[in-house]
Image (cartoon, rainbow, N blue to C red; front, top):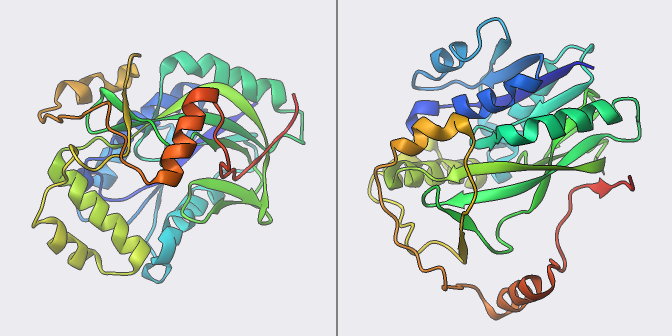
Length: 293
């Protein structure tokens, strides 16, 4: 069994992406790794070059500004990295620039790939998610945060990144997947407030079609307020991946949150309460089809 990791990235320094930690976290179970490095305005390429010389291939790309609407450019960049993976790899492990895998899950993930490599009906593996918010002490605790998504797919180029690169489809059909008992730690909402606002406005540029320059001007006039911009949070009681140790140590901002706060409309409050009481997320969006073991 051969495994190749892949991702895309642009402007690591500008937006303080934990891309080094993301790639490093999955490298132990990847034989190789492909990164599509976009046309950045900072030292992104050099940062990627230094992660794992000899085990990592860089694909230089230019982001297509005509694909801004709906974040489709993210899927396009994902596909560029995926398409660069040679045919002799069996599985492809996708990790985004703000996602990290805890080392405790690596044996389980590797075993799931090994146990299913010959089962062609299994087109991907489904991971659980933990979304951190504000600091490394809090996680999102409502329907706003997706619970599961595909992060390992077969090396089948009929598989394409879907919409804004949250998941994958094959010939526009949902993939047949098996759940793996592992979590993706999503740190996209843990950044210094200034960087967070800049990142949000940059993302808006790739969803609403405005220029990055215009988004940057808007972001420079404000800082993100973590203390108000959440629906519901919970205290994180576990441990973080070892690769995140230095990043966590340099956290230099404070966030005051009220864990009793539930800020959502009546409909979502009702669904939230049902989930808390019975563990059921009614009407959950699923971009995949779960196979029976």
